[in-house]
Image (cartoon, rainbow, N blue to C red; front, top):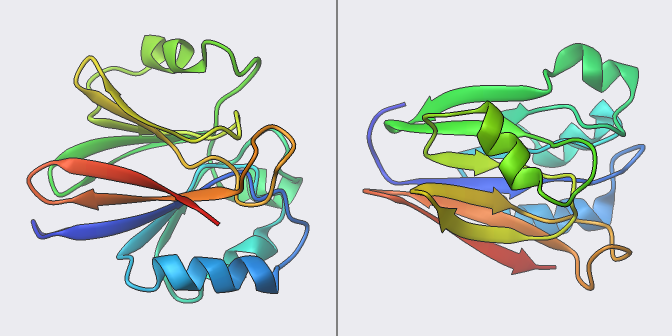
Amino acid sequence: MENRKMKIGVISDTHLDDYDEKIEKKVAEHFSDADIILHAGDMVDLNVLKMFGEKEVKAVCGNMDNYSVREKYPDHQLFDINGFKFLLIHGWGSPWGLEEKISGQFKDVDCVVYGHTHKPVNHVKDKVIYFNPGSAVDRYFNSSRTIGILEIDKEITGRIINL
């Protein structure tokens, strides 16, 4: 992609068996001008992708995803956007210490986008941005439903959005 300002919609842990009109409205409200959408796993079923219309989507599978999702998407993706190296991964095992587990396996990235914990995260550690949009549907592990936005210009900045 050419070097220009970009807006990236980030969502994870949708845990839906099918398309959901309420979530689609929220996604459309916040991601309508996004250049690309990242789904950090646990969509559960590929029908969830219908919510994003014609937008380009990069996705990974999570521990709760069905066979069709696992067949189509890997457990992690490394890619470049505007000269920044991204790792998109769901996560695994216990949610405690997940960032340390991820950073121990993947080096030389500028931004780690992950899910699994259902808790939103947006911070920098050792010059790497760690970004977890939380869960768009779950209130069990977190008091609110959240998604995220990453913006790229000369640097990457992120924000969490309460739905």
